[in-house]
Image (cartoon, rainbow, N blue to C red):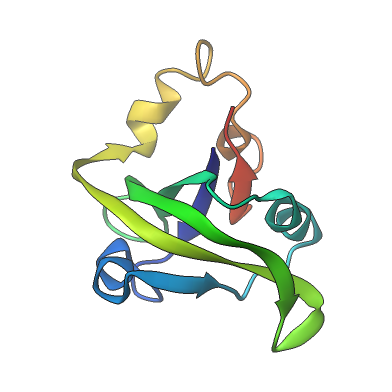
Length: 121
């Protein structure tokens, strides 16, 4: 699994639902780029809304095309993701934090909160 973050004002789970599939681009962090390059077709992605009123996991997407060079800048990578589901209820950051000492202890979200693409084990 992966966690991909987006501000809903920029790109939301609702937009992905309408489009069905999109290029996950605009990533300009070396660590996030490394994670994009590790993604494989079929990998599941938790879709996370950030910088908004209700922060948290809002749905699920799947990698449908493995990494390739970002057309806007060949030094960076993109993947294609397709819509899978919108959750009826957001899994809030507060709810996730309740498990940070247990099942989610290694979750990057708690250590590198600004990272837009991160692994979830």
